[in-house]
Length: 127
Image 1 (cartoon, rainbow, N blue to C red):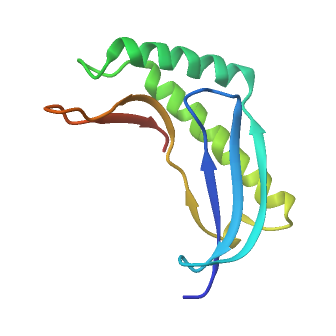
Image 2: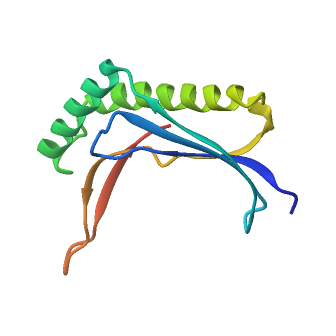
């Protein structure tokens, strides 16, 4: 397979305030070029929204309907991550059409590890 440009995104539940964005060229088995990376800061409004979303997620704990704030946070977070990708790509003199794939796991807002007799669960926001 011919190598393609790929963008990877990472955020953590610690809410360090950044979106980690990295660019590589790969054929899926080996890295042909290690492009660049950046830490794109979340605007304070999104950090505040995500902090409240995490608080509500813990209170929800997979019981009953999901909190309504999930939809708002998912849209805001997805838009911020999309902007971070566009900014990185443009900073390298590339177009978004040059990117073959984007790896985006979303923002984990609740994670319950599996335990004996209980299946694990996780909820990420991102679209």
